[in-house]
Length: 388
Image (cartoon, rainbow, N blue to C red; front, side, top):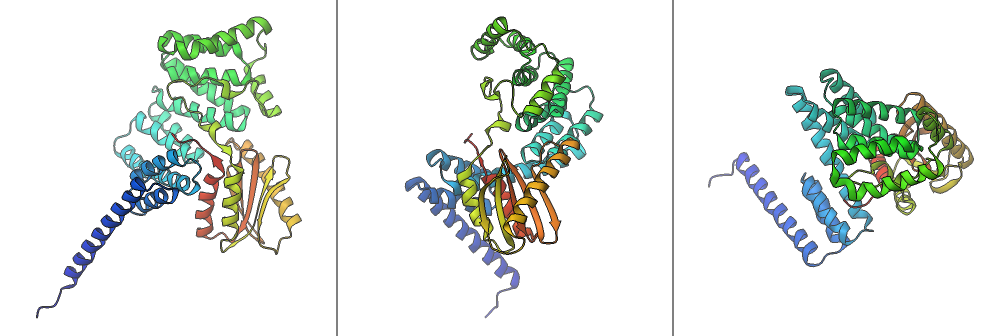
């Protein structure tokens, strides 16, 4: 009797594994279609992620969220799948640029880095593209859009200056760039430079009359306001600094009209305190996590979780307040926007600082990779985002 060779066993095992995976996937799909529940959609999307099929996972999770918009687990899987897709595309684009660089690839790569939160790398990509292709508008537009997003999120004058500088460069290279005029009008509206805002809206209507239905009523309202009250009369630099100093915009950026899928990415990410509370409770009991708390803009405790021990609560709270303020200051001076996340090693362990809109979270852990992975998910769970 002939024995089975090792390679034949490997083939058999591999075939059985594929059959088993296929049957599992078929069952999960059938359950989601015939008996749709948040759990069914989450299990299907999670299975697809584990098999590396992130696009399908994202699509199924999106479908599930449309049926069950408050399902946290589906939202978590969808967010993870989307991020994995972006990271895969970043790898692909980096390889393509190494062999056949062109401005469109650079622009897409920079925007992807921006979307995954690596703003420094996004700007580095734009600078590299500008050096290679100085007369192409693509990366100036992306740089401008990144800076607009940062300005509307953080209210820093430097971001407004850089946004306008890059977008005006786009207008020099291509006066018919619709998105450039939209973004400039949006910044000028937010800071109260209404004459400048109107100038770009009028230019937009000249370029694309199809925008009349969306833009014309908004333009008419601003023109009537200028006629009644006049413009601010201040120069742009002064208006930018007023926003940074006061912490508020002259006009609510939400009032600016959407046009042709115009992104409000810096604005739709609001603090979701319920998601944050549930996620922090889970995170605080992970091995290696000692304490976690969330402070509001006034430095008062919103949420708290974790184990008793060193450092004492009062010391930990003051530590988070002080280091958060210091990190914010350094971020501004280095021109990288406000703090998003910082990991600081000290005598008690590793302190992770995470900035949410209107809140600062401090988590004390042991710096393990497992804790770091959990923090990536935790950062995403603190925001409310609509389903595209």
